[in-house]
Amino acid sequence: MTNCELIKNEVALDYTFQPKQLPFREKESYHIINYINNFKNWKDGTNILVYGYSDIGKSHAVKSIIQDYEEKNPNVFVFYINCRSKNASSSIIMEISDILGYKKIKNSQTSELFDKIKKTLSKKNSIFIFDGIENLIDFQILEAICKSLDRKIIMLITELKEFFDNIDERIKSVLNVENIEFKPYDLIETRKIFKQRMDLALYKNIMDNQAFDFLTKKSFETGNIKIGLLILRKACIEAETKSLNKITKSDIQRIIDNNNTESQKFKNHVQNPYIENHGPKKSRHSAS
Image 1 (cartoon, rainbow, N blue to C red):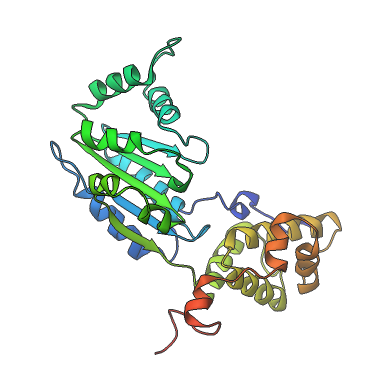
Image 2: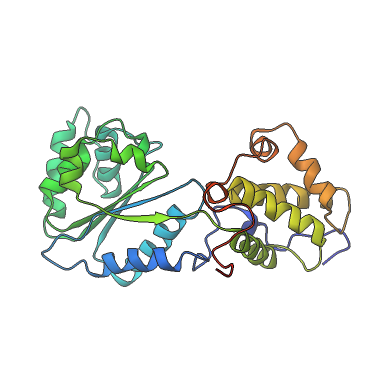
């Protein structure tokens, strides 16, 4: 480490960085793994609705579990669909056909493509993950998969459970999902997550206690670890640029005060739903 070098692994400061095991999501992961492991040949699995507020580890947990499952079960087809960019049945069918490696045929109808998909998957186990289902503009593809394929699991991920609650009852009946809720991190969990990331990403003793307390409390209060990590990364880069070897509370405050969309969410103090339900001083680890 040089005098002004603070970051030893910048990747670990990125929110997309995935630890092998997501901290404090053991219970939720256990339930997902259970449903997937009960998925047997010649039989449908249990469809799952994973829900919870944004940026609390839903997608990370599912991706980590599925990656491990794929390594152990290479013959299972897995389709991850980001519904923020593929939000119509036609575009989703095109995405699935691309994943399966079908050559693009000019003017081909989506119905023809789906018939081809059905034929390919008729004797294979398949897992379909639809992330961000609140962005879907129609549900034809979900209904078609449920009715046309016999050996599959459908996993739906959303931060808006009420969106799923309000869709057509016929679609909900066909999907017949089991709910798995991801609750917001409490303050102790938030502090431990930041400590873990800092141990991976930064050299020792580069942030004073006041700065750490301030950043983790802000992250907890807003319920947004993603933005907290972004602010930490910016503070470290700024400190290195200025040849500083320590990050202080004022450094964190200066980043938050910058006029940008991410920091404004901290500055405007968007309330963590955990606080709304439990109060600011309690945590799941507190004595009852």
